[in-house]
Image (cartoon, rainbow, N blue to C red):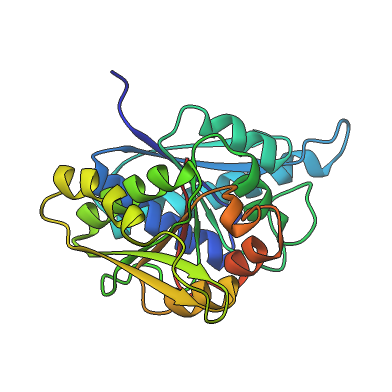
Length: 261
């Protein structure tokens, strides 16, 4: 069986540095290999081609140094590839347990509009994706799982329990409904957590139902969480990674966001 791999995309920004630190720590927790990737332009017959590759190499060296500073025992490999960031990262994610990127910022990896790498990767990658932002590295607070009545709920719950076990945290299974709306799932969803409680007996978990606007509730809860876990296209969140709710969460979450697959 292949060794577990975590891939992190870097571009030299502070957000990418935060992503490297988070990914390195997670790699140690999972006994995984860390692979650091960056993308660069290679224009034919351009005097800037060599310097672009040199800049990419410098970005990688600094990223690897930071990973080893954060987690000296981590097994880390790096690679600079010519091309556009999103297809490179999505291809790398096919052989990874996790793909990690930094949050939105002014700038970014080559070939994309400002801030679009994290949102496009979160939408398209086949692996689970973590967008690192907010209180990264914070050990205090629960792992919050955004759950609804879609088939993806079991996947979200499973990832939440796994991450809670790795981070020595509790799980808060959160469902959001309309203002003053009754809990549509009730005991049925709570019972769906039982298999994960059995698999992770040391993880404390509780269920919460909150009335309100979904994006506002999730963002507010993220401020006291160590990780937010959501599904890619749960119909209860109206296409989380495709619509306004997902965009707001990736832009404003107070902690890293894991899109579970």
